[in-house]
Image (cartoon, rainbow, N blue to C red; front, side, top):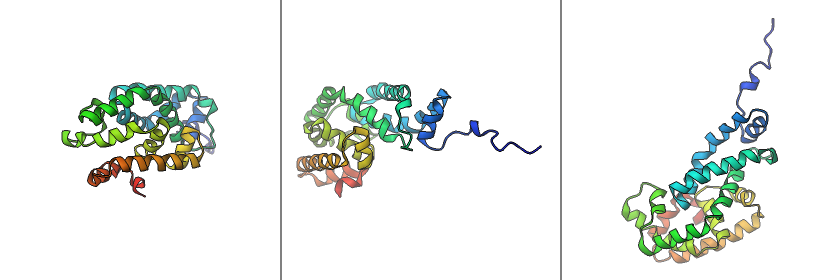
Length: 205
């Protein structure tokens, strides 16, 4: 008897995010693959903005919302990163006042628990984040979202536009405005500017 060429295909995990979302409509457990693929990056991004404690909750809520709304996902978009970061950005927005308080505290004192969660840097390097924290706190929420999605989440302009549901032209204008303000705030410390922008070469272009 010839083997059935379709045998076992149902057990093959999809290769792209859209496939995972689609298959999860019939097999909900498949959605865990999307979590495994993207949760570490989402968590790291939220932790840099709000701290580890908030990152645990927001990452979990991001994927819960994504799971519940997966029937509305546009499967023409093979990658789900902008969708997930958009959900996370909305949740982060609800913590805007807390984020700004933490940034101002870091700018004022050089000591803040959120900063400590950003990386394994030494105390001196954490304290050196203070000028950037002050500059970020001074940005509007919309400009800060765009800047950090590009710089810390490494999203392309088109992905940021998709995540925030704004035109690409608005992304560019917000990014340019935010970048000018940050550079102006850090103008007296070019070494620090180079250090903090190392995660996103596009900041300097």
